[in-house]
Every structure is written in structure tokens, then in C-alpha cells.
Amino acid sequence: MKSWLSFLLLAAFTVFAYPRLLRQLLRYQSHHAAEATTAALGPQLRDGDLIFHTSQSAQSQAIQLATHSPYSHCGILYKNAGQWQVFEAVQPVKLTPLADWVARGQGGHFVTKRLRDAATALTPRALARLKAAGQPLLGRSYDLYFGWSDDRIYCSELIWKVYDRGLHRQLGVLQHLRDFDLHNPAVQAKLRERYGRRLPLDEPVISPVSIFNSPELVTVTRR
Image (cartoon, rainbow, N blue to C red; front, top):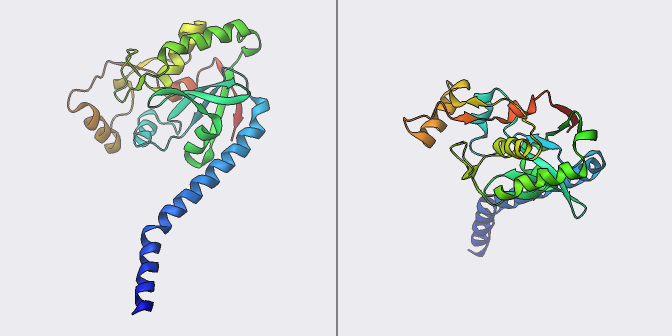
């Protein structure tokens, strides 16, 4: 009887606890790898660089399909107290340690980009203006509806507005929702979830890939 009880307890642990422990182990390994990667990458980075990856969020697939790009999330890199952080629009807009940001992406893959003329354009005074432009948006809620007001903010909108307001540099081309590929069933399902039948097709939108492909930027690293 005791042996059967022990067996059942072991089986229950295997079914319910082991998958959780495995997920925790994989997250630990992913974060450890991200820490090693970002430590090696640090010397190549500059304040104001941009970083892109494939998010693992629920809406990432729809963004990739609609924009024909693997990059569905992005942020601005700043070095604070000797540590690299990503200024990003999640919930809420905040500064995230770079290793945490990298570990959240798919497969640890990311790309960093920089202004083509950063050596002359990103002076200490210009960087101060860039950071100041982002301060009013810090703490704002994430915008699930991709509106253009400052009430809520999404990731590429944050980059576009900070660079536009801080340096008068417009990275990427503003489009409208109707300009994207909205035909895929996964995209249509996400649109119905967010908007019902009233799609804001004329809403201004800036996508991660539009910023990524901006001729104002050059690629610094790919990992």
C-alpha cells in the first residue's frame, strides 16, 4: 500500500511539478545566456542605439504577418549607472535591464542599430534632449490599439516620438493601418479582438520594421 502511495505521489510530482521546474530551468538558462551575451556586447553599444527582436507576446505573430518582418518589438538603449537598459513601451513604458530584454526575445536573437551620423549627431547635449523627450512618456500604459495619441504608447511609437521630439529626426515612414497586410486569418482574428468591426484604417501607425529599415540607421550588431 505504501509503495503504491509513493508511486502515485511521484507520478503526481512528475505530472504537475516537473514541467514547472523545467520551465524555470529553461528561463534561468536563457537569462544566463543573455547576461553573457550582453556583457560581451556592452563595449560596442552607444547611448541612443536602437534594439529590435522577435517578441514572444500574444500579438507578435500578427505584427510579423501584417508587416512582413520578424521584428515585432524595439526600444532605445541607455547606459545608467554603468548598466545597459532598454527604454521600451510594454506595460508600462519603462527602463528594462538589457539582459532581461534579450532573454524575453525569441531565441535570444536581436539586432542593434544606430544613427548613421551618430558620431556627430549624438553629442552629450543631444542625448540629454533625447532622454528629456522620453521622460513625459515614462510610466504610460501600453497601447494595445496602436493609437497615435500620447495617452498610451506602443514600442515603435515610443522610438519615433522620442527621436522626433528630442532630435527632430524621423526614423521610418508613418503609415496607416490600411497599408499593412491585413488578410492573414491570424491578423484578422487579432483585429477583431481589438476593434470588433470598426477598424481604424486611417490611424497613423509606425511599425518596428519601418524604423528598422530607415536609411537614417546603420546596423551595429546582430546576435
